[in-house]
Length: 156
Image (cartoon, rainbow, N blue to C red; front, side, top):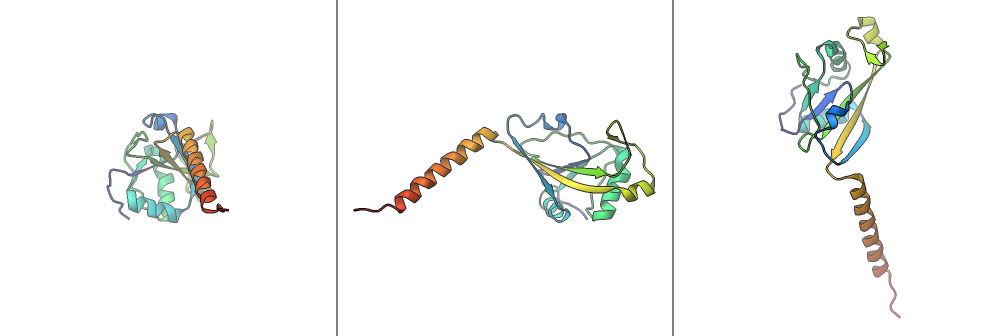
């Protein structure tokens, strides 16, 4: 499966770190669990860039094999920062594998990989800060209430 190059690709990684967030400035990040079907549509629309260590290749190959995502796995780690242009990050959560100090190990056997389960979480950066979104929502609600009361008025 080949995804387009759009300039607004979705980043895919096996973890989330603060350095990924330093390019966004002040804003709001939403987080949601997403399905594989959703990811395929998202990647088809925006494209995808995978950020993973070479040692994580077997994990991502297993994700491709299991879910037919067609991710192009880089030969070397591609570092990135979320920004106005690249607002989406999908983190592949891995469960069922041994870890050391909370981190995935550099190698697993095929039997261990057979036990692994994967879930997907999308993070999306909005350029507006949460407080601004709340204020905007309150103003819209107030305007709607005024409109409804005006339409429902009774002239005596």
